[in-house]
Amino acid sequence: MPNTHYFTPGPAALYPTYAQHLQEALHLQIGSISHRSRFFSEIYEQTYRALQQLLGFDDEVAVLFVGSATEVWERSIQNGVDSRSAHLVNGAFSEKFYQFAKLLQKDAIAHTVAEGKGFVAEEVLQTFQEAHKIKPIDFLAFTHNETATGVSTPSETIERIADAFPDAIRVVDMVSSAPYPHIDFRKVESAFFSVQKAFGMPAGLGVWLVNHKFLKKSEALAQKGAITGTYHRLSELWKHFEQFQTPATPPVLPIYLLGKIAEDLNQIGIEQVRKLTDQKAQLLYEAIGKSKSLEIAVAEPAHRSATVVVANTQKEASALIEQIKNDLNMEIGAGYGKAKNTQIRIANFPAVDFSATQQLADYLAQC
Image 1 (cartoon, rainbow, N blue to C red):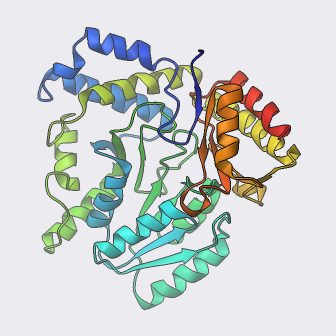
Image 2: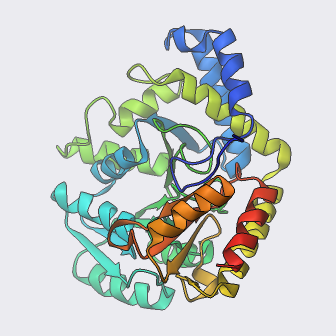
């Protein structure tokens, strides 16, 4: 049987060169080297430089490694919120970011829109600026790509809202879109992702990008007696980053593989990666638009994700998922949460083959 094509939104399809890099890593015994060795520091720095080129940030920004993107929700709130956090919520994952702030006993507010809807900058600004007059907002949480619903927030919208709060710590969750979005790191203090989606790796590594402004905020909070974490508090992570080290034993093998895949993406070029992503997304959305039994879940084209395409189904989604698996040997994702049986989710990450996407699109158009 030919290999299954995975269009699942995470864990997702492995990047085409993953096996090659894994074999090379095994040959080099990467999994056995000391994380205090010069060899590991070289791996860390190589991965840092590859991501720097790919994502377009300067030396003001550190790359820190943690267990998952979910951990970054917690760490960023602990290290960045003093007065009040403000969250843009339009689905399950942006909602969880907001709820983490509540669980950590922070004063958190949210501008919430219905699932499947995007944000209007003027409406968000009205909500937050009125709240800011009562109690200052010093932490802004954006979710660039809501994995649960397939809604993307344009970078221009993020920047416009971020510009209105220049003193705040502005954080972008780009878990299911990095490296696709163009994030201006002069306008935000942090962004983060995990490797099991668009970087085409198994789960187990969270990547946290942070600048000096965020570090200074964390240090100021600690001086005031705030709990900013333990071994993964920002100041400790940063101190070790300066030597391309980590506070505790890290997953050395995934860090190495991430750097290699980032180098591969750099060989293609980020603009070409974005172009191919857009072309594949267009194929999928056009096919869903032609289908008699499917409907594009995000009505507004400007808010449709290029990396997680979501469609409403007339019949149970599980039946269509099984049909596609049997007929095409392809795995697509179910809807998230309450939409499990009424939606399908199709990942459109760099690892996804263009010809396979065309085949899936042709099939969906006939459904």
